[in-house]
Image (cartoon, rainbow, N blue to C red):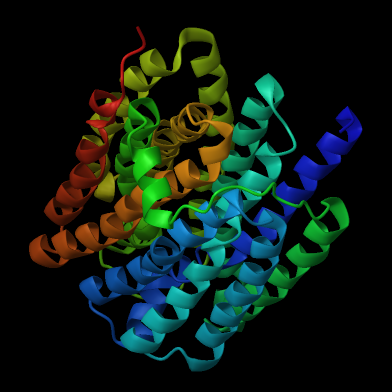
Length: 397
């Protein structure tokens, strides 16, 4: 593949990921509004947010590992349609905890077949340093998509009602289909001896180097998704003194702009890791993020500008290890097991991502979402868990 074709394919897959990611924050961005409209406790809100990630978690081992034997392109396209179905279901049927759980679960299952299979499409066509950087840009696009989803959901939801962002997410998801069809070719897989999924995952698990990166990724995702899920609610608390529906529509925009910083942070973090070594970089940045998490909750009554500055810095530290952890796992796997390794990596990562928002919501219910103490404990729980990540990674000899 020529350099121009590689660039075109990479940009198309990143654009398709952005389109599919429109659904990502439609619940979290409007959390205070939906809590009031659907009469949800903080724990129930955490359950719905976790359901999206559990849908991802339940599907990703099968869908991503399947890319070792089947064309990732076909898996991607079918999964995109599933995500569209889930998004439209949220808009049409959503009215409480159980309808929210079911429709967000379906949307999460759809995303499972687009995010990492899209990365597999990319890595099958690019290799070497170019492939490493393509992984970094693709992973950073995920962060950008989550940020833009927050901005879009807030702007559209506050103007047209909470259902509108899910309708828009469904429409944008459909745009991903021509992007993938027009810029990738169907690819036949070479025949090989069949191995059941559990066996391929077990073989991938025995790769000590890749396993360490994946376990650390799970702790990273606990922190990242806990932060993303409760960011808007924290901003509402910081500006109004209570967690509830807010008339200030700018908060979702500010939250989305803060999260956009995850894009350059992930890319730059990966570049630093290439120069000084992955383990050395992760040993610095993950504990640094944990230390910063201890400060966030105390800022709940600071001026908004100071709160946003602190949250922006926290976004950088939370995101700066993401691409490094994923690139480390993928590059540590043999070619015939990259799909299984990605499946295991994502399974571990989204286990952490599913539990992080739920744990934060439970702690806020226990210690008070309308109190400084509740937020201090919730943010500390997010960050301190992730701070143990480097201890799980095999130190290079």
